[in-house]
Length: 379
Image (cartoon, rainbow, N blue to C red; front, top):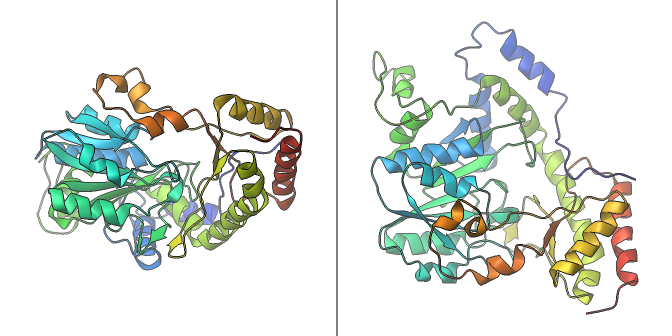
């Protein structure tokens, strides 16, 4: 059996909705599906001021461009993240300082925030790794106390919740609809603007540096170049695909939860018995979007053995980010030690997880893992 690590879900409605855009009378200026998507986020996920972008990276860039016109200084990010989380801010002149993560959720360790060395700190970027947001209340409180901005990279889980929904407590948040994410339009994203003081300026950055959104809304009679910006808005064709998939989101969400729960219920005890750590389950007041199911090996040799064994039997077990502070470019930023990031980076493995996995594939994966460990010596 050969199992796909990821397989994007596309609704049967996609063709109909895209056809509406292609054959409509005003496809070049219409925002019908973009408006439907933003309304969906408002009603279903309690997220206001959601602006669709061509990618999550574009959403982060719109924030970076906006802040660069008002601030100079440092942006603090986890080293255990995707390159763009830091790169867009560095590209417009900010310094980068890395923060360590916790051993369980692999998200920013709030206790490490007081160890930030930068005296010119502008913002904290929190990454909701594997869709965990249980640290967002504490980060919001810390940022308010220190007078810095809170940016949330919610690419892994707009549907997660801990007291409040993901992307709702930060000044700005970004979402991803990349083909690897729970809901996709092939390539797309969004910026969530919770701090309305910056609303107009972020809209300028999204619209090629112009005040076009004020023109569209009838506030001015023509638009012009007013700030830094680029072409970052999502196309209406992609918005149509995204809306079709969002309509089916309950099906996607329920299935991903079934897959995640099966992995945890079937494999948690045997992984722990052999010294591995497992993706922690949600707390009683927490819900996850079940973007990732990961395990952390006791050492790199154990991870390699399991990956090789599963690969031979058609099951892709994938690593994740190399630390940014170890990368060729990212290492130029002087850093304090990041012991947890350095420890776990070569030990994390992610299981196949998508809404199109069959029960047979899930059972097969669990059986292969169990059989592997039955032949291993306990740690």
